Picture (cartoon, rainbow, N blue to C red):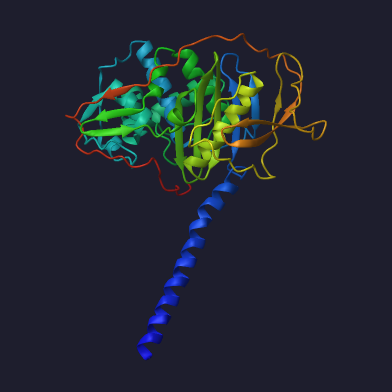
Length: 388
């Protein structure tokens, strides 16, 4: 009888553990639902040809760029290629300093190296921090000098709120940007380097025996997406800049502050859907990943900036109009109904005529096995930095 009672007690304990585990398992998703609209959140969507802003939610609030920094590293590298200061087959040597960078990285030992083209692919897909530092040294002589060059070039592109301190986006409290600046950079990468932009559509990069998958899942999950870059550090959350084209219209969007890549991507898809709807582009059938509804923004989501089109006030949505000074634009999209606040005022921006452009083919590139001593495929997640 005593044995039986002990057995029943053990079952009760196991049942309690299972119930507690199920309750805890539900917490991460609840946290994710609350993330969009938090203090780290900001977003913007612009039309790529003219730069017309379609959606703006806290787009000028300071944020940490994380690996979105590598977009600027690549811009500088593309400029060096255009100006003849380096070649695609030029060798980028891995210094001891660059090799010491934490993951995500290729793990090339000091003294090893890779070609410039392999470096491009490693930055686009693996978001390799060691390669970013090596590229900075290759172009600027030192990563510190390269970061100064990045900041100066960013200013000339109109990225007035951005300051770089390294080439990779590894945590640094002085390295800041905004959603507007990152979307501007994404747009300039497409318009300034149309012959290089196809690299951002690379889905897999073969490095030695490893097949490295691009961290940007929007490439396969959102119809029309063909770049640009993802980022994450603890201080910023999950960030993304995405460019997508439908029916000859290209949009560039940026969002910061997701608590998971899934939530971030779903919200980015919702924003792009609304942007295409404003440009008169019919909605597309949702993918399996984008189909689930995204969490609605919190009430403390930053107020949206003025947005206009065709030198006229944008028509209100089909739903009931809220307040005269603010309307909520919502469109049926991959995630169901998702609302993003947008104020309406007049500007001189005009909608461009549709310009058909073929979507760049997604690439599968081959890297060299000789220089890869250590192959890692960890996610680009780094710990929060100690404040300087």
